[in-house]
Amino acid sequence: MKTNEGVINTFIEAGITRGFTLPGLGITWSLPAFYDRQEEFELVLARSEQSASVMAQVAGKLTGKPGVLMAQGPFATSTGAFGILEGYFSSSPMVVITDTSCYDGFAQHGVYQTMTGDYGAGDAFAVLKTMTKYATYATTPTEAVYGTQLAIKHAMTPRQGPAAMIMRTNIIRAEVPEDARARLYPTEGYLRRTPMVPDREALQAIAEALAGAKAPVIIAGNGVYMSRSGEKLQRFAEAQGVAVASSYHGKGVIDETCPIAVGMMGNWASASANRMVQAADVILVLGCSLGPEYTRFRDAQMMRPGDQTIIQVDTDPHNAGWVVPVDMAVTADVADVLDFLLGAEGPKAGVFDGRLRRIAAIREQNDYGVLPEYKTAPGTVHYADIMRGLGGFLEAQDLLTLDAGTNRIWATSRLPLRHPHQLVAPGGIGGMGWSTPAATGAKITCPEKRVTGLIGDGGFVMTMDAVATAAEQGIDVVYVVANNAGLGMVRDNLGNQRIGVDFMDHDFAKVAEGLGGSGLTVTEADQMGDALREAHGRSGPVVIDVKVDPAASHRDCSDYGDLMDPATLK
Image: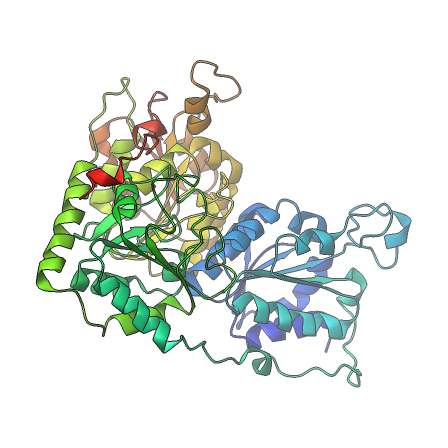
C-alpha cells in the first residue's frame, strides 16, 4: 500500500465518500489512488481553492460528517483558507489534505512554492495550526495514514471543526512499510465514542427556572442548527409559551412565522428579538457563544448578568460563561436538553397566557415580519422586494445560502423562514463570495433539495467560477445576484464620503451563459417571484441578475437605535 492509497482508504473506512479539490504538485500525485476508488469516493473538481474550500465546509455543515478539501500547500493555506476559517469559526467538520510542495528533497534550497518551514520557504503547518482544531505534519507514509485518521477524529468530535494533515511531498507515492514500528490499525476504532450524558439535576434546574419565569427567552445558536433540533425546540417553546430568539448561526431553526418566534438578535438583526431578550427574566442559551455581535456589543440594557437569570448549554465547557457570565453552565448536547424539557411540567395557565401576550406585543411594536414598500429609481428594485419574492417562494424542499453585506442583513432581519433548517449561512468570518460556491456545494451534497444562493454583485464576481462547476457537474442551482453596482454596506457606512465602493453595472445574465448556465434579469419588484419560479424550472445553473437601487440601505432594517428602558416592557 502506498501513502495515497492509505489516505483514500481511511476516508472510505470512515464513511466519507466525497471530496473537493483543485490539485497541484503533491495533491496531483495523490490522485491515482482516488482514480482507483472512483466508485466509492466522488472527487469534485472546483475552479479555485477558495470555492473548493467553501464547498467542503458546506458539505460538513449540512451532513455533520467532515467535508474534504484537497489542495496544494501554498494555495490550501492562502486562497483555500477562506472556507477553512469559516469552518473554524462556524464549527463545521472538515478535513484538509495538503502537502509541503518541496519537490523531493529541495526544501532547504529555497525552491519556489515550498511550505516546509525551512529558510526561504513558507510553513503550511504553522499557518494551518492557526485555523484548525488539529493539524499534523506527516514526514513518513505511516504518519500520513495515522494523521488522516486523527484529523477525521478531531473534526468529528465536539466541538466540531476543521483538521489538517500536511504531507511531506516526497512520501505521497512511497510504500507504507508493513513492519512499521508505529503499527497502523483500522480507522473505525479511533472514531468510536459514546455521547456525553447531561447532568440530570442540572436539567431539572433548567426546567424549574423556565416554569417559574414570567418572561423566559430561549436563544437558539449553532448547537441547535448542527444537532437538527429545531423541531424539538419549537414544540417545547410553543407548549410552554417561551419566546425563541436566535443567533446568526441559529436563524431559521424553527418556523419564524410561528407565534413564539421573535427573530435573530444583534445589531444587524430583528429589533423584536433584541427587545424580547431585554425584557426577559430567564434566558436559556442553547449552543450559542453569546458573542458581542449578538448582544449589540455588550449593550448594557440588553443582557444583564445579575439582573436576569442566564443559563448556557454547550458541548464545550469552555464556551459556557465565556463571553457573558452565567448563573448556570451545562455541558450537554442541546438535543438531549430539549428531550428532557419536552417532558417537563410547564407554567400555570395564567402565566402561559401572559407570556404569549408579551411576545405578541413586542412583535407588533417592532414590526416583526413586516416588509415595507420602498420607492426605487426606474429599472431597479429594493432589497425588500427580493425578500418578498423569496418569502413567497421558499418551500420545505428549499435550501437558501447567504453571503455578506446588505443583502444578507435584509435576509436575516426581515425574511422570516417558515421551514426549519433551510438556511445555510456564513457566520464564521462571513466573507464576501461565500454564497455561490456554498450553493453549488449544497446542491452537490443534497441533490434532493432545491437550492438558491443570494449574493451581492461584489461577492458574486469573487467566486462566480462556482457557476462553471455547477454546469460541469450537471446540477440545477439558482444564484440571485443583488446587483447594486457596488459594495452596498460599505457605501452606506461612508455616507457622502464615497470612495472605493462603486463598480460597473455588469450583465450577470450574460456571464452565466458564458459559464455554461443561463440568466434572467429583474428590473421591477413584481418580477421577483416569477423569476425564481422560471429559474428553478430550467435545467443547469441559472443566475438572476436583480438590478438593485444603489440608494437602498442596510440601515433601514438594522437595529441601531437605543434599546427601550426595561421598565417599559411589562
